[in-house]
Length: 548
Image (cartoon, rainbow, N blue to C red; front, top):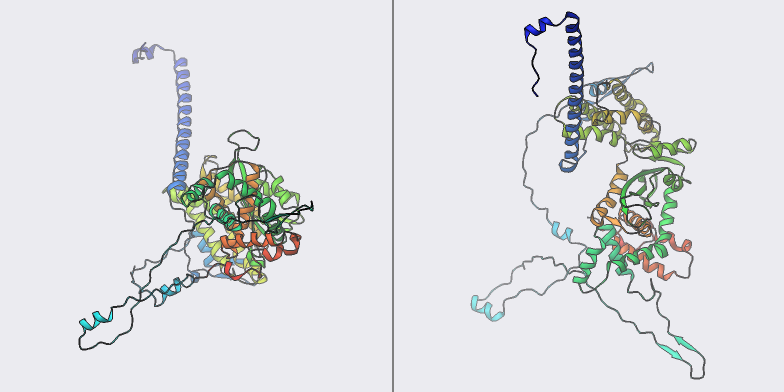
């Protein structure tokens, strides 16, 4: 039913007090509509921003390389009265990083260095084939008056011979006494698993394929079948669990103890799925990774840990019970809770890369507006902190600490003073810009800790690079069937990543370790395990990575 509109004559008939009331109600309605419209505009803007950020994460440029800075453009000036002032460095944080001058692009075609091919192939077996000759009769036809043989020409070709399987059949002689003395069998070498096809070389091939090259076992089974060996995925999965439990666990424990004896440990975690862990479908499990800092005398060690899918404080609390030092992590609250429990012997340092990344994502996805302006300024300020700190990256600890206090601390102070001064009262609290600002403010104590301790790096990128290897694998195999499989995978990933970090050839290393353990079946692990550690100087040279 169509409502009748009020005409001017009908409005004149309405009493004045009723008109006033109608007008006030209409103005109140306008205020509500305007308020709702403003709120909708904010939500739409926030959603557009989130879509842009997610699009950037999925399809955009992944690099987080900081803007280049000319070292000559940054200087520090400190007065004699201990009141700290900044010259160009202060200007840098206020106005952003200086733009680099445009450079002419020159394309230079470089000639291949002489001897490069021989250098590239110096570790490959070389076979000198018979020369291609012209029969003497043919030469006499071509040169009736005689000929002279000049310097030979040579060329190279590289052949790839795929791996293949060899089925070894062994015979064990059995003897029986003619007068009831019993039965005697000839001695045979120790086996990884009695009545199993598994050998150290086959085990090393499976481990390298899955835990180094991220090939899931079902694809590996298909590949082996094409090469003539029908090995089921289930058999190979069972072998990996038994190898970890019976042999490699001793290596894993020794690596873990070495890691806990260091001064600084990086930590990160990532979700994955264990389908038969007694919980409901779709429940997340977590793989944790801890690793050392090579700067302070420790060899590179990577320890993965699975703990029945938990992401609570109990996991790092138990793992780090014997660790006394600095834990470098992201802003996950679990680590901060652990630091409060162990004020005397455990410190937590924050990751500046995480603080920067939130603004970088906005900067790469949002091309204009307040988000873009603030994000660009935050990235520039953090880049200045990185640059100033990296100038003394390799300096001795006392000198590095002095430089951080004198040169880096003012930049950090300026950054947080600027952060605190940003008005967030009108920002959408669910928006990415608000979250990026709050992350820096909430993590301020932990982000500042590196200024007090020269052994602490600015970020946790090394741990993220390590956990990424597991993430690449899980995108191939998607799930792990059982908790036992997850625990054995943690051990195997730990040893594989540590071996690579110590510049060992994974296949050769695992084969050597398993062969050596078979030779020490009657010995205690502590008597020989140190010689098998990835950083041991007693490892044979032929398992070390080729240095090109």
